[in-house]
Amino acid sequence: MSNHTTFRIGGPADYFFKPENKEDAVDIIRYLQKNKLPFFALGKGSNLLVSDDGYRGAVVDIESALKSIYAEENQIYAEAGVALNRFVDFSIQEQKKGVEMLAGIPGTVGGAIVMNAGAYGGEISNYICKVEILRNGSIVILGKDQLGFSYRRSSLTDTDVVLNGWFELPDGNTQELMKIRNELILQRNRKHPINYPNCGSVFKNPKGSTAAKLVEDAGLKGMIHGAAQISERHGNFIINLGGAKAKDVYYLIETVQKTVFEKFNIQLELEVKLLGYSQKVNKEIIN
Image (cartoon, rainbow, N blue to C red):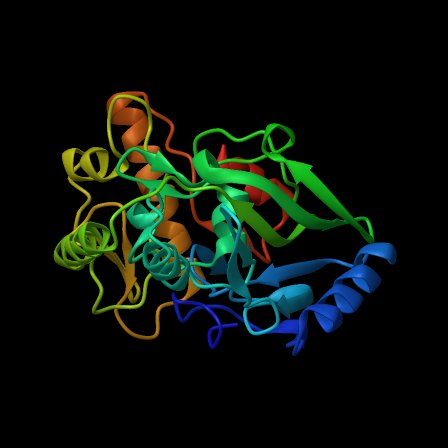
């Protein structure tokens, strides 16, 4: 899995499927769901830490299979494998505003829906009309009010697979929106450690503060374990200096959570998803 994550970390999965189109993807996932076989739907592999031992299940790469995007009447239809940068650029070209705050985030539409991705005060859920998912082998369409959105969360479970979404965006000016998009990308590139493999933001921001500030105030920026480092540029990023193992990253995650709790009585929750870890480990480290 180190070949399929932005972290460049992770052992082997038992099975890896790369469907060519939506029909193949649906057939594979439907089979896995109906037979209650463990699986994970993979987009760009960002926001993901895979265990060094790998994953005892099937990984289904949906990025190449679910890549359609088009405008219809007053809505934009985007499949789960569409890259967020492509989604942003397409929306801007259609003179629609609202999702430009996602520019520069290395994820897909499907992952953004599941975790209600956002930045700079905006969230993708603000613009969702409905979402098509695979649940227990059946295709289900859910309205926005059925998705249980909150900060970096939705009510979708690990076995629900987003296939596509319909979005309604207000009108905007393409030139102005492109200027905002470009400024946001430049801002991200200045702040984030883009020269090293990473998973993006590791922790969710707690109320009243940011994870990056808490890490910095705890004196943890720059801390190294093995070949993993808490970025000196941004405290909410852990970077792979070259050959880092999941256990190195995991150690830094635990150290941050423990130290921040001891110093500030704040429990940082994970934004990065763990794959290949036991349910007990997942629960303890996320909560």
